[in-house]
Length: 508
Image (tube, helix red, strand yellow):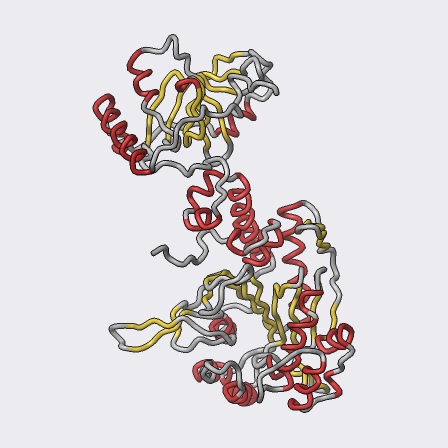
């Protein structure tokens, strides 16, 4: 087995006997006290003249030959990730990369040596010195000056170079970010994706707006809301489950014919690899277009994200290569059910008959639900997970689409589509219903629909109906889940990977 080079960042730290967390905190606290006596409290330092990132140093001096030394002085700073040979070699990490620091233990003065002996894994240090490439090829800063900028009193996790405890990773994301290049890359890609979508919509003439998170009625979707209480007004309020109704009201008022919002929504429901109670949604609305325009912009946004993050329309997710090359196929929901199960639910327009037919293919539904809800249930169990490549599922039942226009010649189905990728719903869009009379009737019908045994009737938003009565232009609208799209674009198998701080049950 080859012995690691003495100046290599990959050289392992010496094995020592395990120390309890309490003892380690006590040891670090004692070192802080000694450091304070020696040079002052590091927590009183307010700044450090950092003029290069780790990546800057490596790029700027990449042409150095092994053993070559410069006369260029740089100031760098970062978190201590490795200490070897009594502090002779220290590896720091900043937000760009890792960088090796060298101290000649034999020649440094005693005070600096004392400071060096007080450095721990996890500390944040600043170093000023000249740049060289070691004989074994590592870009290195010779530390002429060393400043401990922050003392890590809490010891890093045992597996500092790759946390294995999943609960620890998500509960203490700051440690996961330090330990894992993959975590940093994933979250940065998510935020780059959102920035790219924003800029794409700005370039298309959309206006970014904000709508209330606290709402009197949770509208725009069917979901169980989080409930809070306003003390001064002595009234319940709900965290929004969607931004739809307020966005439409802004278009009605003429603020802009194209609006969008990327923001947090909340649903008081289950947690799963694809569901978090707090999630980020994109919703956009454009006047004087229908759902076909929404198909076009949905494809364009996702295609643009793929090119931005990967430089290609083809993106690997697990063992599957997803192809976002446009255009994507459009398939009817009932037609897909027939293709995968041989059951044609158009032939059974009566809800009770549809329920009986669903049973014949193994789909059990609640008594009293509508024909549209039966279609939705069968699709969810028998078809959804088979739609791997991007597909627009069109012609959803009107009964499960209370805010969408129905087809004049096919009143049973709506001018609506859902976009599926990897078996997941990624986007939902439709030609927006703008007849206040029909919208009221739809809301009343929705309120009477049986959902779950513990679900109350969905409330009717009279303020939105009043806004519709003021006159809303024909409009297309679309909602897209940023978290699921982020999962696809970063090859993440759980939604928690793409949310910096996912919802976690507290530790007792």
